[in-house]
Length: 523
Image (cartoon, rainbow, N blue to C red; front, side):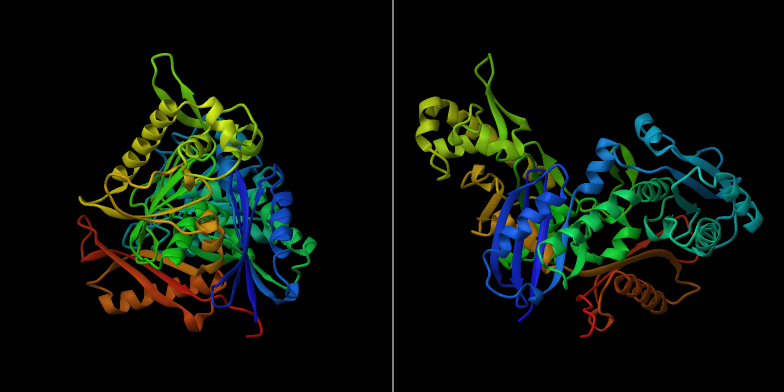
């Protein structure tokens, strides 16, 4: 029997689960997230291993979902300097890199930029002639001044040869291990948003190295030394550690995604709305054919518009640790501030002095935790009912905002803070809860498959549709294999074809997704 270990690091708790090869949960635990992350992971792994009696060498794979990269961008911390080479001279000079970026984030990256010859039109025609000598000269000037490189070619998703050539020249000058991000492998069509995503990917290199090394070290300290480690992507799939080191931005948004996948597993539903109520926030997403619904618009990450793959998630400041207050006019407010991982020290039901949503749930009999008598002494029934009505209204509004059609939806309710949710909600047909819902995020990380996506423009008048779709599927499969999938198990899960009205020759944007099982060495 082989086992899998899943860990999800949230803002409040670090959860860990162990599953059998048949996806049966045999152990689960929660520990507080620690400032250095690694300690919290080690604590959770050690704690969950105490609940099993098999040899640790039986754990063949270990998965990690983390918010480290998201936090680094939002907090402007631990980012490295980036050299930005845009291939599109002179056509793109009017809109330089870092246009509309927050000044503090630009300052954190200490960037150098250059717009050089190269780039393509949408149909593959050259904008200007790419020049090896020009690129080499720029890289020579930047030697020792940048810690990573972002390379962006106009319409490089159509043809990425020039981006790859810049990466080759950079490795010749700076060494094979110098981090280079090519935009065709990061973002979608749309120059500025793809460029922004590529720059962020480069800036996150050091954060991901530390995260990956910390995860590996935590496993070794816990005696889980033979397990193959993986990180969670934000589309509900996994990627190998080596692939994650090259594409750290793909972890952004993976936390809510893990919860959506975990909720799907617990409910056996493939189409539903999922709400993950944590200690600080409630994240709402939509499950479509077993995977999270992807955002169809450019996504703001830390104040930057990007177009890399992101789940369609709505977050509100409502969690199990959200602070509840009585206002002067008699109204009650909930959040957005929270006691977070200090809930067992600060909440009334645990002997603290702060009224939280968890205390409201205890006062109304929705939850049996802590000491109910402490809550009854300090919270009146009228105040608790007002707070509950506010919580209910906040949840109902968020559900309504995520709907794409009229009518009631099924809701999968997960997360450690799910106890604060009422039994019924307007606009919801049935609410699904599960005893393992509090660790749905870690379960989602553990059951995930390896994924690959590919997107480009095809002119069907020149390339027959069947041939174009086969080419795109092969490219997506290649990405999945690069990320750690067993090619023999890779299969197509979604196809999107969008005609481009302004382009001649029946030009269509094709986007495919492929998933496959983990490739385990020696099997």
